[in-house]
Length: 93
Image (cartoon, rainbow, N blue to C red; front, side, top):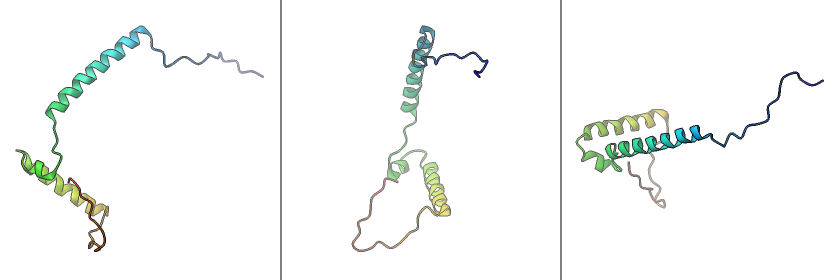
């Protein structure tokens, strides 16, 4: 026996109507403007030394201490003595 409900064929969801396309283009332009504005004002330091030269150095220092404390409390890693035949991998922070 066949179901009584009316069946609709799948839509072509990837095709946008002109109104949807216009709205999509406008949103992309607004997003680009917002991204540009944010990227020009929110420059984060790339290294710890760079962070310590900034006017907000104390806040960056506290954030680094908080992050290290979180790693320690989560057991993310343990400090060990370096084996003689191993090379230490550098880090920016």
